[in-house]
Length: 158
Image 1 (cartoon, rainbow, N blue to C red):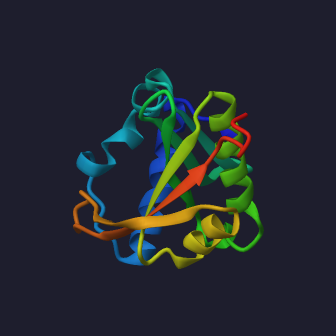
Image 2: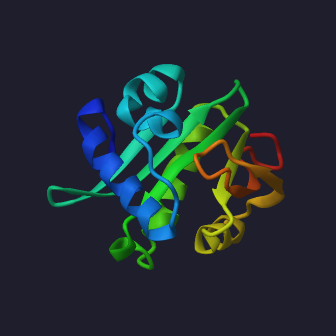
């Protein structure tokens, strides 16, 4: 798992486009997916982070954290190619994102995920994320998403 740069954008786009096709989501260049063409500008220079997972020369996974406020961030664009799922990699990516977010001083992380991605929802809840509701995403399909809240700060406030 490595910090992404704009040089990684073609691989990031390939992973997310592949998952979109797998789940029947509409892909469009730009628009809803515009952040993927400039991860440095959209994530890194705005106080967030983005990582890629590589297997040899191939990008096989992605994960981002968006900055919302001094205390709040959002898990974003966490995707794995089908062949990489079921090996604990999603859990490791989630741990990387939450550890990084905690180190940055964030206290809470929102997670929004399409209702079709049930394995991801189970993984988030297993790690302590609590459901917070539903929304219609602004993606090309106006997809229904489930929301989760993950507390990054300990109960003692640390």
